Image 1 (cartoon, rainbow, N blue to C red):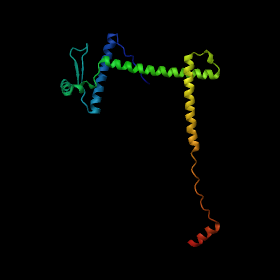
Image 2: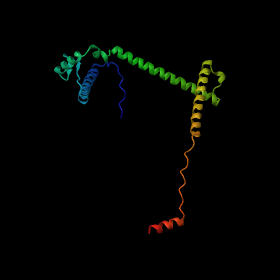
Image 3: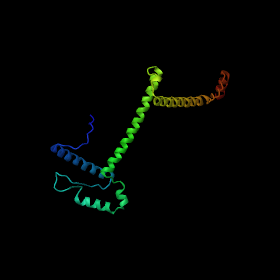
Image 4: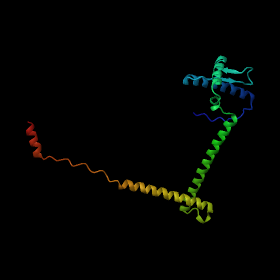
Length: 187
């Protein structure tokens, strides 16, 4: 059974929020441990929460200091190469979603025009009732379909022009007399 997608929003209920925090923190620590073991890399985390007096560190305070010291020794360009603020992360996600939305709008529009074409061919929609914009779009779609049909015809013609391979040379038939002579010769 698949899990339903969790809606990411602030949990208003204090008890539920604290329980979710503890559960997800435990999951985060487990994932960091797995990442460290499976990939052989240094990982650490510092979690400051309103539920704990001191920040929680993983794997240990010494391990965090060691990892942070190694990180700080890196050139600044390498340090900030993969860093992302919440604002830039959200902006990047918004841009990606806007791009997906544009793509979906374009696909929907193309399907609507295609549906208009089929309706007009079936006589359900009269061309006279279409706007100039719809007629232009319909004309472009018809031209595109004609080009695709032409390309398909050309590729089929090329296939048809290619001569079939020649038949294999006929095998020499041996007569009964030749077979008998060959048997006598062997004996």
